[in-house]
Structures are given as C-alpha cells and as structure tokens.
Length: 283
Image (tube, rainbow, N blue to C red; front, side, top):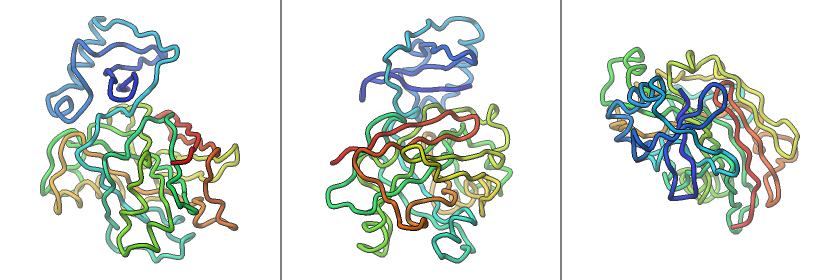
C-alpha cells in the first residue's frame, strides 16, 4: 500500500495511491498519517477501507503532495553507510554505525522548493532510503525483531551543507538541519509491498546529469541491523524516520565539487518508491 498526504503545507489530508495511480481520500479513516495512525493499526484500517470501496476519489490535478508522514518526532541519520561513499570521501569503513540527528523541522514535500542557506558555498545532495517506524521499539532482540516495527519506506533527500557540517563544528548538525533540508516522499510504501530493502536501486541527477546510481545491497549496515542497533541507545517511536545513508556520487566526492546553487534542479528516485524533484532557491 502507498500512503501519502496531499494539500497545502499545514493543511494536508491523508490519502492512498492505488496501483492504477488514482488517489483515494483517507480522511474518513484517519485525521492524518502520523505516529498515532501507525501505532493504532492505521495501515490495516486503511487497507480494509480500500478493499471495501469506501474511499472517495480525489482530483489529483494541481494537488500538492506533502511529506507522507506528519512531522516525525525525530530523524535519525546514519553516515558513511555505503562502501563506495566512504571510499569517495576518503573515510575508513566504520566498525559501528555513524549516527547523528537531524531537525524534524527540515521535512518538506518531495516537490517543494529547497533553500540554499545564506552564506552557503557547499550545499550537497544525498538520495537515501528512509525507514519509517510503525511500533515503539526499545532494546530489540536482534535484527529479526526489527522487521516487526517497520511500517514502511520512503525516499529521503538528506540535503547537506558540507562547510557547516565538517568545518564549523565537530558534530554534523549545523550542516544537516537547515530549513527544507529533508524532502520526504512522495509515498510511504508499506514494508510488505517493498519486500527486501536491500534490493533497491537509488538514483539522483542534477540538471539532467546523473550523479548517483547506487544500490542498497552496498550498505555496510543493513536496515534490520540499523533499527535493532539504534533501539539499544534510544527509544524509536511510531512515525520516527531513519535515514540510512547515501551511495557514492555526492558533490563532496566529485572532481571540481559541483555544489548546488539556486536555480539547480535535482531529481531522485528509488525502485518501487517513486521519485522526487526539487528546484533550489535562495534562503
């Protein structure tokens, strides 16, 4: 099942995207797609409503697609989690996941404008597989238990400002938490539809030039390991998002470091999860 939120910022309503591309209004089942919806068997209720034919169709023409999950409680990010990305940045393969946090207020829709921060000269792109938590998780008993707490997956664009991230502080937060720096969506695709999260291609282009063409099989720490690992150090709540890392091809690792400028357009996709497109503006 593909769940999404449509409408103006702050006024989104929940919806379902059918296999033939129609949008169905989910408002009679839930007020929003958030942690409470996921924790309260919202996915099963939505699936039952679709099967019963109870959901009215929405006119998708001109309808904005927002982030598929209302503002998450937290965004947990994993750095250097693809072998080729670690190599391109000159970093050693980490023995444990590199974990940092990103401000949940960075989340915007998959087609919304992204703003280059004032004073920025090193704004960079990163296509990532996002994991959305569906059940409260603490001290999970190994990777197998992680599968039971994952609601689904989405595309995440972990936009980064490398000077802020790497040169202004020993921690990465400054370069990761600028406004609009986490487009999410277009859909939350339930885990049963995605299948194996380690069998997905990731793609990103800038102004029509392909920059990233990776595969989740190249992850150093796979999804189930990450969820289990993180649950030892923090409680994962329904609606939380985990950004699982990016493959090679970021501006930081390319010849000439072609960082983003206002007016640039980035397009990204992950197999089975749809695509995003953002034109960058100036903050």
